Length: 152
Image (cartoon, rainbow, N blue to C red):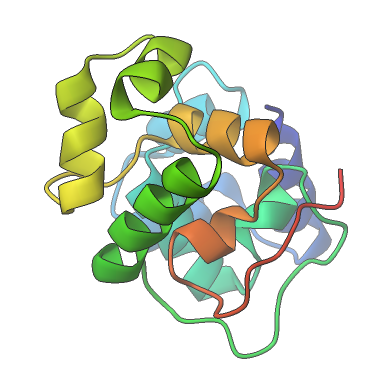
C-alpha cells in the first residue's frame, strides 16, 4: 500500500503544504508527515476526512483507481452500510469470520466488531480485503452506492 506517495502528489499538485493537511485534520505537522512517509498508518477516519476536504476518493489514494474522485460520493463513512457490505462480501465469497480473521491475522472478535459496526475497519485490513476480493474501498465504506471492482 503506497498511499503516502499519492497523498503527497495530491497535496503538491493542489498547492497545499503538509501544515495545511495537518490543520485540516487537527493534528501536528510531524504526525501528518508520518502518514506521507508511511512511518504510521493513517487511520481510516482521518483518510476519509482528508478525502472529504480535498475531494479525492479512498480508492485513488490506495491505488485501486486512476480516478481522483467519484461523482455523488457520500462525505462520511456510513457505518451501517459498511458493516452490512463487509458481511455480504464475506458471505458472497463463502468465507467464515474465522477464516477472514485468520487471513487478516486478527481475532474473530475483531471481525465481529467490524460487522456489528462497533469498530470501523482498520486501514490496513480494508486495503487487504479490497485487494483480495477486488472491491472498492469507497463502496465498502458506504461512500459510493454501486458495487465497484477495483481497477488494479
